[in-house]
Length: 168
Image (cartoon, rainbow, N blue to C red; front, side, top):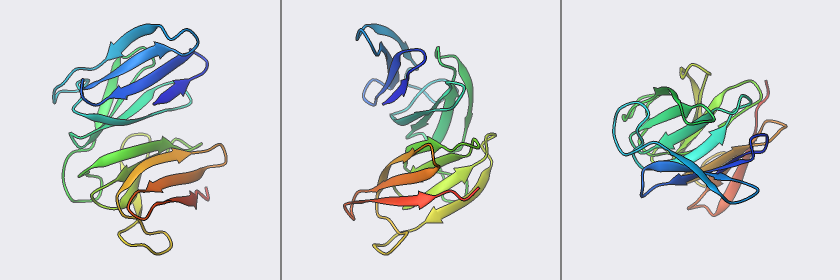
């Protein structure tokens, strides 16, 4: 889920219906849905996680191996990424977050890492890797970034949350 406090909207990823459900966060009223099942831009295929940037745009990971960006009212803006095993590609994209400089972080459950992209969707660098040591993870499933640019990654199989700091 993601919350846009200014617009009073709660965005919920409905994996089975292949859409984002938008609810008024004060009244609980269903406002509208974003997406439908498909491969084209604007269509979703098992959306897993959502985050919102400073402009209110939605960034959604889906199991098609991509990130899709929508405006606050559901208008499709663009997509980046594809399935694969090279840097900048995804196998099982899950958690997603955006830091104060607009970098996009995506946890990939299959690669056991997090990839960082610029605002245009170009790969900057990955971090993490498989294991149970410091900075390592197994099956990362969620990701959040706080106002101090601390990156929180849920590490499912190690049963912990890893915390990283973006240094700017």
